[in-house]
Length: 277
Image (cartoon, rainbow, N blue to C red; front, top):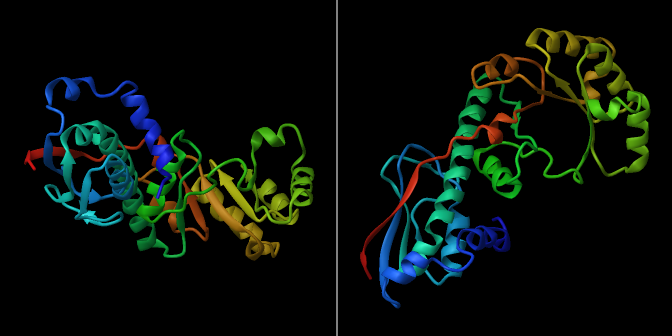
């Protein structure tokens, strides 16, 4: 679960001086019952985070659907009982977290299933194209995908802007000397650089913005050179839900898409007060 202190920052941002509407309108001590309901079909996520937030403010929570479960429109996800003001204080933050995480998890599950139907060994991964990393990375995991690097500290990924300053082979040599524990990945855009990267000892070669035909040609070249089995092949750039199946057919290991987080569509969930407790 995402650390509570991270989630509480959203509450503090949303109500820096309290919820003035509830404090003005709802008598102190009023108890209420409420439910959180799915308004569409999909994969639910963020349940544990919502539960932690409500419980932090003293609201009783009954979990009806767990993270990673497929839900249908109208399904009850959580039942809540407790102080009405507390329920309404947490409401929007909890729904925002669940909505974003469920939107990501739903799309990840869809694409993972699509890829696995074509090539069971290929993994689907996200990228760092997000500012809400704890939320988005956990949602990807719940959906069945790979989170990729969580931060710049996790693994070494040599990109085009690094290679604009340091030659490819030298960059890999420096990276391997820097740490024996960090995975070294290199982003390349040509068959020639892919071979150079594999020969220089890269653990992962990312084929960036290459067509399926160019990728297939590159992989065959790596095989001819006896280099394919020594590296993992990741493909990225220009991959969409519409064409991902074409990439999955190839002899690759990972497909990564920034789309999973930078173009997420929120999943529709709502909270309804059903009466006084």
